[in-house]
Length: 185
Image (tube, rainbow, N blue to C red; front, side, top):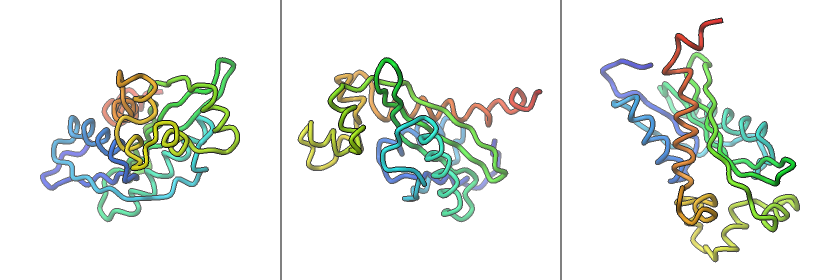
């Protein structure tokens, strides 16, 4: 962890308000002197990740690209939503990757929500979740993705996109806040 007098820069690889709020809320619990810089970076994966593997790869790519884009950043944070299909249906979740300058990486995921069949079918046909939800909810201003997210719509507000990414962020920080345990063999 960082213990310096100057502000520590954390590069966040997204311009999404819900994701940014999640990172800030959690990171400020650990690093009170953090300065956040948002940058739009490429994920290196499809616009709609269709597996956990792809979601993790997108989050780690975003973390690395964000850190490289922000001069003096101590950490890069990448966030990526993804769906994963199994025998019970298609589930939506989020992945967070935290990376430091030494190349140490922590990865965490949010909880998951089962998608309705008609949404899953749209994704399998090559659609993206954001535009599909915009159409269903008649969200012409693209507010859902920046606020409650699909998970918020499907749970009628019981949880939100920000809350899901907060949980993933907390879990991704484990290797950084429990270094001694992670170094044991």
